[in-house]
Length: 342
Image (cartoon, rainbow, N blue to C red; front, side, top):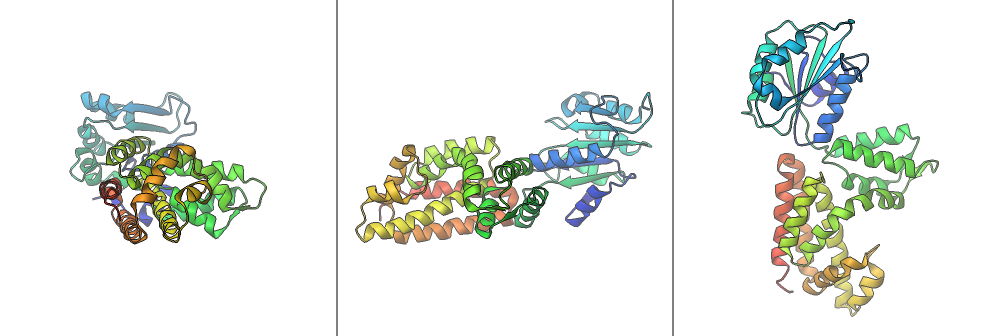
């Protein structure tokens, strides 16, 4: 079985083995699949924009004619040079073509297959894992160590440092999709160009804004006791590629603020005062739901929710493949129980 793990992935990507030219990239992080595919293809041919050097195939079309994969891989370029094949897997299996290709003497051609989150019993994954001339590389959402390295790499290129509080917040807002994370980092470094150090204000001004457009309705709906809103908006966020951990992080920040505010209300501070001056950058459209949450939750219940969210965040780190399920279940639980006053 040739399924690479951990450091073996980095070693292979840095210096792909010519004896294993068939590479399956799969997993829930579509951005990481795409980034690794593009890097492998760029190093496989002299000009990725040359259609004679780089052939693009659709997996569903290959399913109807699996032998085409072998034909393309064995084709000798008209003007010489190296070739590569990029295959985007769909819903139909072309594992038979991979099996046939694995037994063929492929020379000067790299075959990169991009797929979604494949189960262990998937024919495509099994074909690549059992073939001696193929490797299968899983692409899961970045963990804290991966995000730290990604942040450091982008900041180094921009000759920037980052303040500790800014780093912590930035890390909580990234993840789930490597390409989206990298795009946000490049936007941030452009915004902070010439400053020397990225601050928390920079992160909140650039990265948080992009996330809140999709996240605020989910978090506000949960604390306001609106499970239907949570379900609908959560589904939209998943389609948009939002990492569930970002949503849980936003819910943790809101729970912390609500707890602090609940203590202030208990001491006599009017809710209206807190809404007008205490909540950072609260848009008027959010005030109604936030007010409902403040009136429904006591400080003691909010402490319990803070613990619940912390447990969810930890579980999501341990079980990345179930991150969306864990996040949605936690937020729905908060929403369903929110109407119980006290």
